[in-house]
Length: 318
Ligand code: ADP
Ligand code: MG
Image (cartoon, rainbow, N blue to C red; front, side, top):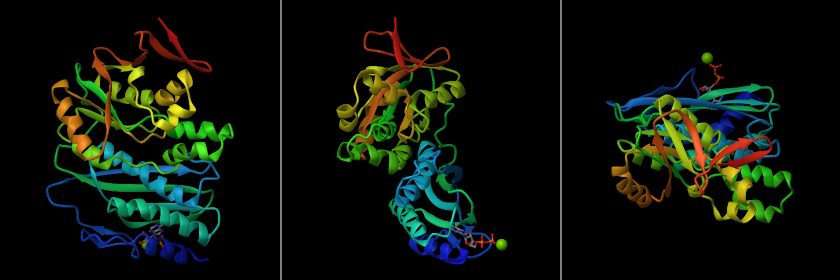
């Protein structure tokens, strides 16, 4: 199968009409017309087979996830997505794989009205790099560096499911019990509506891709503050509650990656309205902690004892 045929298979499955795309796939480069008076928000993320997703991940899920992880970064900035580029490195010119990959990518792109405007197709170990572009009103992007002492800390949705799916697979948990967890790993839902609703309300925001504590550490460092987390307040899905207990569940919520939820900070006076606004657009969020003087991120259990990661698991100490 020629490279051109592969590109055509991708293009035909990802057709989204946007009138800000003056020229899409097919020339040396795309020509795009950003809306006047907006700032352009751009990011890129690479997925490597066997590193960022298990080798047996369905092709549709790989396509979905490659776009989802990028849209999640735009969500964390409060941006509205518009355009994507896809650099695809394939071990072989496998038309069936490309069709299924493109269908998964296209399904999520259609949900958020994202046009695929170009890319590159090369031969090598399966690797997918997606670049996305979005818009924000000037000065309104959400950043990591705005958290202030006294702010409260929130997270959308629930934590730990994607990491739990990987553990459940290793343990050969029956597929029927893993289903809800697998969906969170394979088809994360980027919180774009939520990110947009947080513009002008949240003081800082980040998407949870490496694990809640690791990601909040970036917020703390960039904002020059400390963050305290109430471990008992961390939201869990019914699937996680059913499959994991105690410290094991806590470790997945605090340290597991691939959640693609938004963690954000806001002034206490805004919190009530903000949670109501989010609920109205179908995005649940939970208060999980506070911003304090100092540095770093520390979680506490229900007794007020600090919770810390020791070799082999999480450890509570007074
Ligand atoms: P060039 O040789 O000028 O770099 P290519 O032959 O690589 O162009 O690509 C031809 C067209 O197809 C370009 O518009 C490019 O953006 C697009 N394209 C190539 N690969 C992909 C892909 N994987 N997904 C989307 N568009 C692609
Ligand atoms: Mg060229």
